[in-house]
Image (cartoon, rainbow, N blue to C red; front, side, top):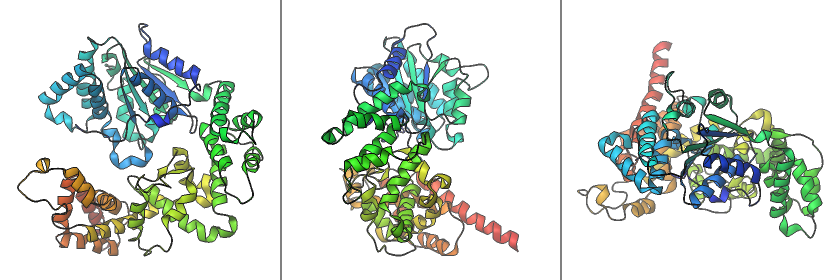
Length: 522
């Protein structure tokens, strides 16, 4: 069955012990409620930085750790190429089956009778046949609630990409039937998102949906939780900072756990020679009285401003924008060596700077800056939003769309240098891939991360830019040589041959636009 890798529970994201106690208890009581007519869905909303995902992972971990039948599914803005919205219910169904043998047998029967269900992109069919069907059978033997946690629905893409998911959860599939009513009475869905207009409009009036907003939680309660969080993070600095300082920082945070995290990282850092933790603390407390998103924006601008001082910005900003643009425009996060390997083929030529030197100082904002194996991506979605909104980031603005041309050229050139006949050195062409010993290891050893990325996404990058003759020649060279067959072989080895249809269609559309423009210009 289709499965979204890396979309599950991450215990590293759980709340700090003894924080969010009232909210977590309220959600736990809702999950366990036996009250007739208890809402099947609890929608937890809140603005960026409020700590929504921490609540989601804490609840999922608590429930599964205590033997409950549950699943946690997380959307991620940096993984748009995964199209997780198409795999949401197949992934959840597999996780529920892993937890319970009754669900496993019912799911096996469902896909045995209808083999196409394993790969269908029809999420309504996924919902009805893979979730409602098997869980209805299992509910007769399972007294405890079944919990599904869906985190960061607002990061699933544009509004149209989640419309059907929302309609299913709101019971608005058609005018006469509520799909949620078909679920067993012990079914619970915890949905986490920012309060985007399309999500609010679909869910707010649904009778079986309970809405809890983190923006409405007592400011005193949140402030105490953030103070506890800050005191934990700055425990090693108690020789110079005290609870009075921690309380002042918590008050300044305006209920934003993400701001508190960044403030702690800033205070512990050594961004300036001769300025210690107390100096950094004073910088955090002084100045602006801004609230909410604006407070986060000022924090991001401060961190970037100290990494790139005003007198160095003329040279630093283009380099920063180029590297961060590549990170934000890439269709899946790449580790530093792969980013560097791709950049060597950018149109500007070989880089005369090290990517690590650009990303090294950004450790409080990005993952993977000190580890060559961890993909580089923003630690929090609000940093992505800040960089891509010129009205918020100003001089640090990243136009990610402008990088697609470089990524298209780079992908084609990486394949030109990396693809070859029998790339995994298989001993026989008569064996199906499924029978090749240790094929996964062979693929990993023979197909580099940047080559794997290029094979899967070059067509998307080409299709994202305007027609250009020099790029067209690169694409034509790809088809004129044996490279096309080698590409198909590599995709098959990576279990991605199905993506070749989308790639070729995208490239054909790109050329057809050029043909149409030539026709109408004559």
